[in-house]
Length: 256
Image (cartoon, rainbow, N blue to C red; front, side, top):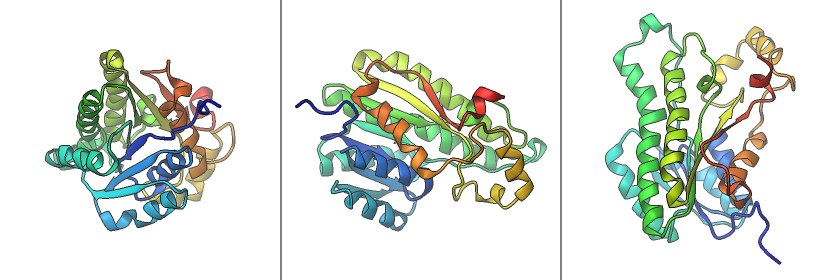
């Protein structure tokens, strides 16, 4: 029997920022589809739960401390993955940072922290993994974590919106450039998910009611809602899909 079209058996995936929230959920979903994992976060001890959940699916999981803003450490981290797991087939650029502030109060330090994490780090991770995949003979999938702000403007989130809009443009440009090498580059745009990074918003009951009213499915996203789209984009099921972004948003963008 041929391998199921959504299977990732025999594949190796790197997920950045995988210690909690969507990153952890994505790592677990990839493991459930059959992939072995190499996961990163700034604090390696924060990856213990992710590693345990992946290994509970009987998949290999190696961890590494890596700040995506530290470009000098990316190549070494990629080399470590190849040494431990033999190859790289998938990269999920999940690491992200958000901070809301009136635009007149944004300083250079905040701008750099957000854009360097969400856009610059994702590019140089993609570059390093593309080189590794090419050395292996080509063929692989990169998935970027875009955002609703890749499509719509959000007041007081201009650095974040700029970074995620840029990430969507980067996704399309890299897809066009690397298609001939067999590397597909796509993205997902999560809607409103309650995570550690967004928890402050959810402390406001009025904000919750206002947001729910804008989501046709009338609920916020759950961790288990995110993995399917990523597995699709990393599997043979999407072999002829590149340069696209799938909103995972309960219908938010379709209804505004």
